[in-house]
Image (cartoon, rainbow, N blue to C red):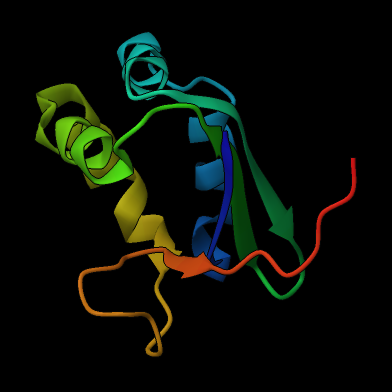
Length: 109
């Protein structure tokens, strides 16, 4: 199992919309997350800075392949099309990233 974290900004004018969307995530999107070996997935919001922090545990053997499978899913693409206009990616993110991936620097069970 690999713990993973990511961060992105949230448009202040879209906070309520983003909360509403995530109060009723589409069932097919949730199923695809599970099919891609992602468990214990949470997104946290820090207001008033409007930062989103995503955390999940990856239980598969090839994250890149599972991420590609998720990205190829038409329903997931539709979901992203709805959510992405709410988000404000960091200029410092790596090439190919929307959410900026984070390095784990501490963990305690």
